[in-house]
Length: 591
Image (cartoon, rainbow, N blue to C red; front, side, top):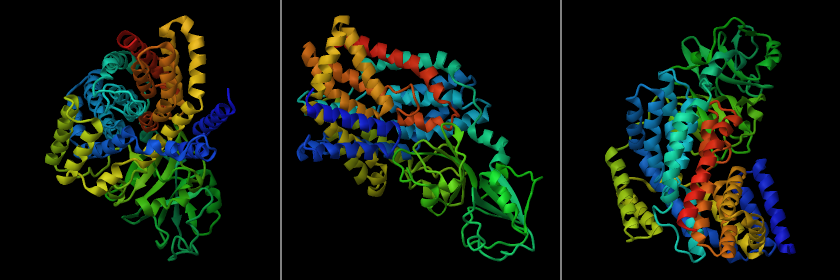
């Protein structure tokens, strides 16, 4: 091993540590790694920037816009909701849900599908007395499985496709991955419906659990006539910055003031509703004129009225709130909402609300004001996972069908070989903009720039692994160790290594790092490199074992009330199934 190889390996290990322990946003960590390679001379500027012009990465950007145009019409949501609503058996309803969702995810981005269906499924389950935890992990897994069937199915497939083009290979055809993906989907769905359903926990909805323990989240104090700050603003009364407490609502006769602003005046007789660390209420009890209501029947439902609603939201991977303290985000004024509690890893973060530093996947329990829904629709900071009291006005369905029809037409052109994938998606976006199905502002909001930065940076890191000889070094050792055990063993080791990287870092970054190693292994064994390209694409997407390996798993983590081990119980057998199918089909078709 040369010093350059050792340097790259050490930097990569540090990068993985940073990603595992969430020291910063993943895109920032990967971009910093790329910058280190550039400054150290491991990469030239052209090599470092190569990923930013890669066809696969640019196609992903276009697909974000197309998926947003299709999703906003609500056609996909309503059609699937009708299918599951007609069934009386939970297991039949699960099958009715998973089959079309798997089909949609073969052509649309997984994340918006899971975001759209999570609140719909939770409401459907709650109305029928079924635990949402029986449906939410299957929802995520179905979109992951569906993404393995086509080139459009997931960003990972397009990333590998772009790498193949860079290496002078032909790239994937639109349905080539379906040779592995289709049998994996069929066997995987059978497992989820008939075995996984039994394994999944029967958890109560998180909002219901919180409501049952309202006293741990809420405290009520009444303003007496002798309170020295009567007729003063909340800010001047010193109620804005309390030790562990947060004023979320004022009940004044029949009026409810929520969220509470710093300029709101305190009146005698006001009922002040606090959340946070209720154990710290003793300090406030010492204030003359504020009386703690110990016998109150206050609960979370009483906070809801015509203007405010109780909402759960999951912090997204591309959120501008990441790694910031809540009090530094201007959350209340920004979203017209107050945070009651933050849950992480299915447990409440017991700290002063304002001092909590947010991470991707955190579940926020919110009291949303009258303008909350309008503001959140313009944001990608978090995903709302409960049905909103005021459903969004449905978009023009004609435009929705036009978006779907245009996408299907372009898929036909790609399948028949008239257009490349990149050209077809670029033409689709232009047509959607001309027809005003999507506006330039909506197109810009649909693009997840942090995901693109991560992928583009990962391309440069893959080049560093290849150019320094580290890919060849790892390939040599892998072949030396596994070749005596047979070709199946080589494929299994490559798949497991890719899959482990996916669970530790991100799917696209794992694919980029493993691809040059796979190409080197193919050369040493003198086999078709397409075999390893397919293996890596599927292995990097098939993240079932942890909630952190794939974004859709993290979205349903809090809303389903899952434990980390729930993913392992149902995910390990599914991961083994997909690996077995992939290795068998790759060996059968390409070796």
